[in-house]
Image 1 (tube, rainbow, N blue to C red):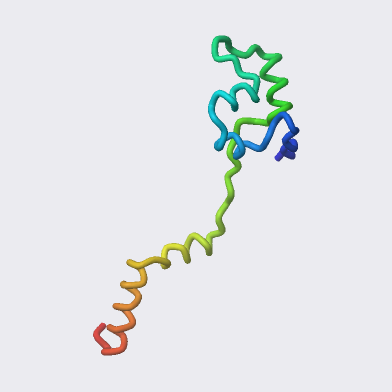
Image 2 (cartoon, rainbow, N blue to C red):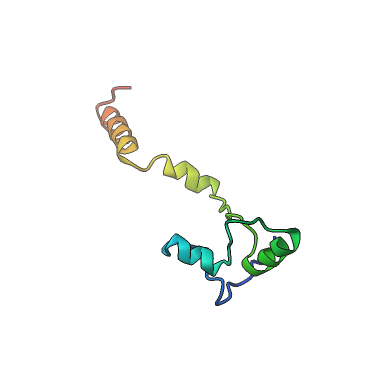
Length: 90
């Protein structure tokens, strides 16, 4: 996997755009909504801002399994199983 380029002062991290007004973000990204990008402009933007992708974080098998037993409904089922075992009602 390629190393992601660090944001330059002209290109803040993606999360920073979420808190900006749309007009300001479009100006900062040098976007003109009336025309499309040609291949050269797209290559420059790809180099400057990086690819348009979301990194997927793999969750471990154990974490996914244990997450299924965490919450009010699993706790209720677990408590019922413990109480049933205490009175030996199988």
